[in-house]
Length: 328
Image (tube, rainbow, N blue to C red; front, side):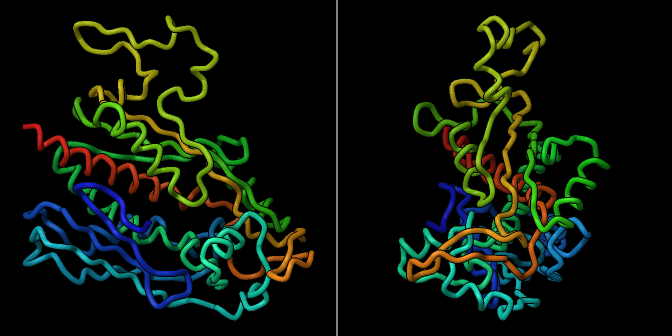
């Protein structure tokens, strides 16, 4: 499934070592001011090769808007956005043609389709998120026009919370030929009450599904999340006063519908599976082999996943905002 959303619909395309990646957005309202620089800002935050903490792959990630915009305004027709792959080194992956990388989707793609793109993982690569971010940047702009702002931050990396400690932890893992994961928080402010639908269209379920759909994410919590399992109801409930809610343990969602408070989401990001350390695996013939993954990889995905998480939360809220307009 490569299409996401009901009203603000996106279809992403492309592979890590193909000619290009991108997205087509359908259902975006007409009349929104849009230039390529509006999309580029979020793409630049996701872009590799910007520091020693990220993959050294050098990509400009310059977006081209191919359709759906006329004289600086969206026209209500499909908006196609393209980002060309310019710094692929497919030869680095030739040794992986018949070998499955541990922690990657190599083996599952092979089982499902009977064929896989071994060059950086193809469609399962983190580069697939370029299309999500391009589409998400448009969603975030639409939301800002409605007073909704989304911002993400790094909570921790490998258990460390201080900025300097985080940097040292990533660099130490890189030096050791290993990788680390962490936790990212995304907060949406200005969200009106009433977004989301009861039962099977719950806002928290839509958010959880969208963020779990990011390849490296292994857990999602909203509000106090898993911590509520150790709380009393008297402590978990958010008291209401004439001035509003006194707390926000629920993370801005009650009964699957936004309450008007900040929506608070945290995601658990796994360590990058491509590491230089030797690992046990098998090849396509069933033989056990040892592998050291070459190529260019992030020692930690966490810094670059922040804009991806912002984009996905933005896509959900834009979709739900358009859905809510049907009730007015």
